[in-house]
Image (cartoon, rainbow, N blue to C red; front, side, top):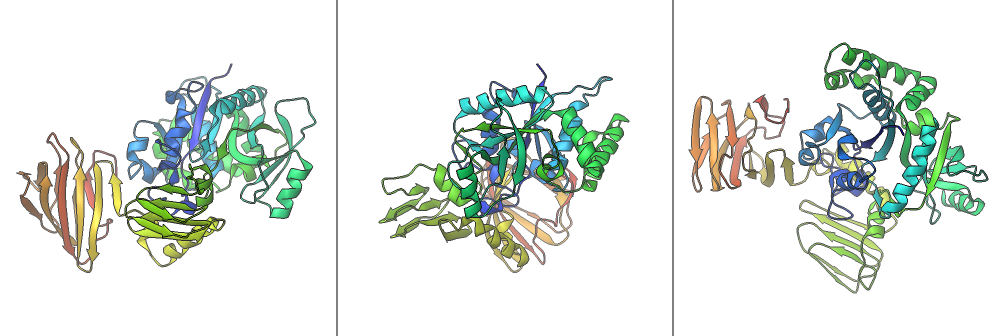
Length: 472
C-alpha cells in the first residue's frame, strides 16, 4: 500500500460568515461546530488513518504569523505569499511531497481536504476514504461526491455513470451551481452528487494531469522544484515564485477536462459550513427550532439563528431570521439570504471599513490586544502578553506610546535601556525609539497602551528582531 499524506487547504477567506469570519482570522480557524476549530476538527477526524506528522496545511503566509499562529505553529505548513486558488496549492503540495530530498523521489497518495468543512459521521468518512485510496492506487483521480439530501443551488454537481459495478464511478461531467429547477431535475434523474471539493490521488498522477491540461502551471512548479533541489530553501522559492502560477481551481484546471476522474459517493453528515444558513442547520435547536448561543434571550422566536459573542441579544418575535453579534458588528438578515453577506464584505472593502479585516480583539503570537477607543490623534488598547512571550524589537515613526501595567510585570527595552515595570507603574516610549515589551514573569501581563500621534495604524511598525519570523 502506498504512503498516504493529507494536504489540507486552509487559505480561504470565509467572507460569507462575516462578522465572525474576518480577513485576518477566517472561518477555518473558528469554532463553529464544536469545541475545536474547523481546521483542528479536519485533522482530528483523520485519526487513525493518517497521523498528524503526515498532515500538511497549505495556508496564507500572513496566517502563520498572525491571528492563526497558535493553530498553525505545531503543524507542517506550506505558506502561500498570495492567493492563487486550489490548483496551484495542490500542484505545489504534490511536488513537495514527491520530492523527499533524496536521490529517489517518493510517490505518496494525497488526500486533499478543505479545512473548513464539517463531517459528523466519521466511520462513513473512513469507509469512503478506503474506497478512494483503492481507486487512487489504480492511477485514478478520485473525488468525493456527497449524496444529495435535497435540491441545492449552493453546490456544484457531479454526474456519474452509476450503472457500473464499482465503488468508484466514472465521472461524466461537472456542473457549476445550478438554478433550483435544474437542481431538482438532477435529483429526479439520479446519478448526481454534490461536489465536495475533497480528492484522493497519487502525487505523480495529479502532476501528470497538470502537465497535460495546465502546462503553464506545471512549468512554474517544475521551475520551483529545480530551484529548491539546487539548494535554495523551498519556502523562500515559494515566496518569490508562487505568484507566477495561474489562479485556477483544480476543477477547472484538471478535473473537468480529464477523462481519468472517478467519484466515490458518500453520505457522512457533511456540510461545507458555507453560510449562516448552513451554521443554523448544524447547530442544536431549542423547542421552537431556534439555534441560540452566547448571551442571548429569545422570546416568542421561531426557526431563527441568534448568536452573541459579547453583548446581550434580546430578540422578541423573530421568525426565520439570522442575528449574529460581535464586539463591533451586528448582522441581521432573513434565513435564506445569508449568501449575500459577501456583499456586505465587498461594501466594507470599497469604503475602507476596518470591520472586514480584523476583530476588536486581535490575536498575536505573543498574546492579544483589544482596541478600547480609536479617535483622531490617539488610540487606547488593552494588551495581554503570555508568560515567556515578547513582542518584536520595533520602532514607530508617527506615534509615541504610554504603557500602564495593570497586572503582572513588564520587561521593557528602550534603545540600550532595560527596565522593569510592575503593577500600577507606567513607562513612556517616544517616537523613533527602538523598544520591546516582554513578559518574563510567572503570570500573564496585562497593560493599557495609549498611542498618541498623527498616524496610528499597525503598518507603522519597523521590526528589527522577532521571535515569530515576522518581517516589516
